[in-house]
Image (spheres, rainbow, N blue to C red):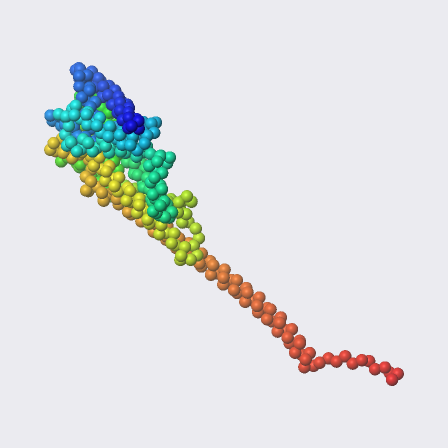
Amino acid sequence: MRSIVYGMLSAVIAFFLFALFVFLASSLFLLIAGMDAGTDLSDISSSFTAMIIVLSQGIAIKTDTLVLSIIPLGLSAICISVFRRVLLRRANTLIGNIASIVTWTAIIALVALHIRSSIASPLWAVLLYPTCIALIAYLWSRSKESPEYTWCSTQLKRYLSATTRRTIALGLRTACRILWIYALIGIVTLIMWIALGYQSMLKVFSMTHMGIGSQIMTSIFTLAWLPNLIIWALGWVLGATISIGTLGQFNLWIGQSSHLPPIPIFGVLPEPVSTQIAQRAILLVPIVCVIQLGLYSLYSPREYRLLKKRRTLTSFIDFLYPIGSFITSIIIVIPVVMLLIPASSGALGHKNLAHVGLSIGASMNTFGRPLQWGLMVAWLLALMIALLQAAFTYITDRKHTATDASENTATTDDNDETENSDLGDEDASEIFPIHNHPREDNNE
């Protein structure tokens, strides 16, 4: 019973900390916006905070003229981090952690009930999405000393061999590296977008007639959707299309828009790449990065250590294990991408802006292409290098063997000649025997 109470308290404390952060940020934003507009917006601060909280949990909100379902993944990440820290500080049993998850879902459902007129998601989404947020925080808080981790490790050791477990572990490690590389590519691309589209964003600000304070707070508030923009930027590099409803499309080849809403962040969306060489170079960047990552995994002393001399065909069996590891990486990365693409996209209106962001159906091929080609090329390149090295070693060994054989033959011939000369002397002595006659005495 005590563990259940502790679990419920953990969820309440985590929600209080997260809600306090959102309330302070929202109040500051509304205060500055009200000062610029000459109105008092403090009356809507509580409802505005509640709407931001439920939106960060994946629950869509609506007004009389707007439907918003684009999740601010930055706030979701902060929420998960806060919940995780609370769970780490208050170690609990499995029942207590389940109580934390259920309590978190109940609190979010109560907040959604408080602003039920502004909720656009169905009831199942109101219950499911906060549960997923809490479950991610719970899984992230599990360490190697936790009983859940110990139980899973015991079951894996019981049913899987050491080689299979090592292959899965290396595949998981490679998948994490690929996700980090994807994130780095998206961040660098977004920085370039901002640097090139800064003037366009200022023009959008001027169209909205915002004051300096509102412009600064809007830019800061937009950071809540920064992970969404990183995913869009990554999709753009991979060749996917960013759709702003039916009003605009942006990819490496197309950059057209008409009558976009005056949202400043839309000003950083890129122009199409002009030359075909540059387009191909951009598409090759993720593939080259995955190739380098695959080669590192194959040659790393802590992983497969395939860079060694091979003198027999049986020694090439080591190349079969990375195939399983790479397949494991693809199996892990693809579902993560399938979750991130719809999470980063959503609705910004009813008709023309019913879908803003990436399309999961059209983007899966573009996100999976670097994985397939990059890991396959890395494996084939490592195999080719090993075959060339084995061929060179074989030729070198044959030369050394031939040289040693010729030296042994020469030595044998010399020994035979020496033996033959000795035998000739012996034969001559047998044919012409030498007798030692004693000297006769002359006196006789």
